[in-house]
Length: 123
Image 1 (tube, rainbow, N blue to C red):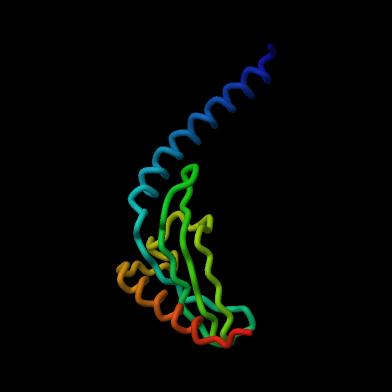
Image 2: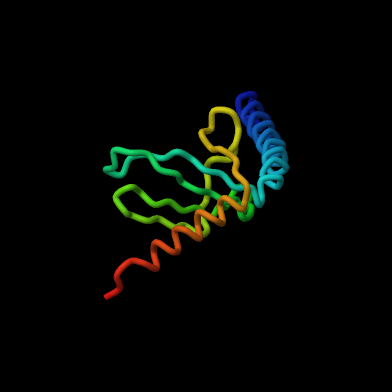
């Protein structure tokens, strides 16, 4: 094995050790997130006004957050994602845009959305 191959092997080993240590720290942080709820001031989708996206961390999957999230856009479109992978591993952190809320607020807003959905005309 020449010098470059030895260095490449050492670099890969160091990167693997770094990623494993990072995963341990991420898992500790994410474990503490289970059950926490957040809201995020969302926009887009052809709407001129903002609305709230609600998120509840439900579990960890391979070290990453899985969330239940829902929103109702001002134009009436509804999105409910009961088991969504979340890239936002730092929800609630300064600058993330996610505001931590009480689970009761999350539940109340989801109940209101269910009432709205139940009021939609059915064919």
